[in-house]
Length: 440
Image (cartoon, rainbow, N blue to C red; front, side, top):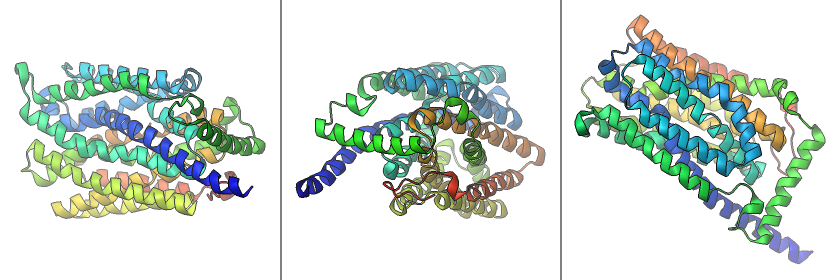
């Protein structure tokens, strides 16, 4: 017994480190490519809107229509991934969206963009919730917030990398008479196709398939994950129908909706906002300045998720960041100082991004693995409709008022609502597992 007590922790620590090193960097890279291909439209807008005659309202609709296709195919895609396997299904998703992004380079009018952005949503549907579900296949509840946050730091990294690359392409590449914004879609769509092929050969579906784990490590990991599954199933076994009718799942979906309004409202419009604040920056300089809020957001995201994992607390760690984000946007609306505005954009981005790690650890506290495939997809698909509302509302308000002030108040209102809805989660509605020491 004494020997087992000394060996077992070292096996666990070694296994968790191996899984972290093998999985997180790769899915991090995939999400960088995914998010870059999703929001590079915001950088293209610096030239594309004038070239195609798009008004602010039309651009907002072009930005948001992606999420309609995403919403319609999200749950079916996640169910298929659970049945077919992550390796094949995620590879299919990535190749599909890469091809759509490349074709977007030849769009000639708003209607072409409507169709292509809708198809991009259809192609990408299932990727994010699929990865969230995939993480639950490999990590215990106590490590999930950190795993989610490390994965989702790619949100910040994609903009830190994508902002200067996208704007540099627009300013410097005009091959064969095609303007830079068209080449941006081509050159940023190709990596997705390549990553999709690599995914098929690299990704491992389950711990039993991991040739990179020893038999002892597989046994330890499977035992730990099985113990958590048993604890959840003893509480209540949810069918797909139960999940779709579960008020707790819909509550989380509503919370995520309010947060995503702010996320994509800022994501698609930040380059334009920074351009308006300065009035003198080139596209490349706009890209460099845009990096600053995302650097702040990425660092805050990792630190906050680690704190959530260390304390085992989820609800307050998810409720506080949106309120901080709202404060940043409100101050930004009241100032004309470009330096303070960029700093407050950083505060807003930090608030929005710090929400993700603790929030995505919540569903796994009460949903079994099979139910989580549907529950996570439902939360993400409903929530991502906020990605339609946010960009479209900002375009409408910007065109109606002639400034971004009303738009910033609109986004801050949704972030405050997100914080209040998260605080409204009842502690007893989520399972607390003694072995994980998780606290809502």
